[in-house]
Length: 66
Image 1 (cartoon, rainbow, N blue to C red):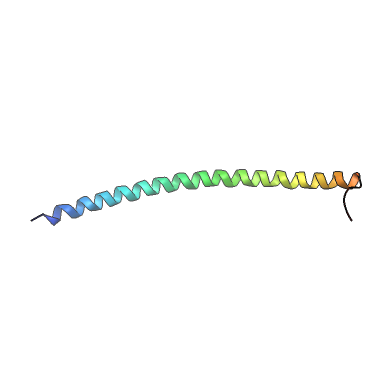
Image 2: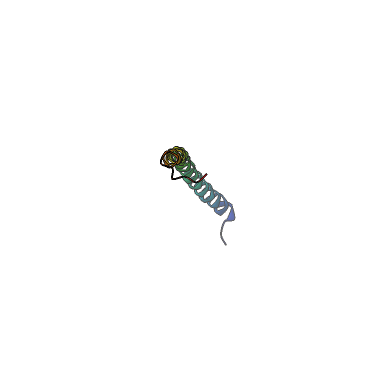
């Protein structure tokens, strides 16, 4: 017969270690996602400015429809 008194704490330690690993991974994922969001925001702003510049060029060259 096995001693369940020793097995339970062992399983709990294993679960705690697994949760700690997941927590660490989630921190990394959140950090990387934040970096991606910042880069996307910067790129989006640049594309908006580029779009307005192209519209101005089209208007000056009479290429834009009214």
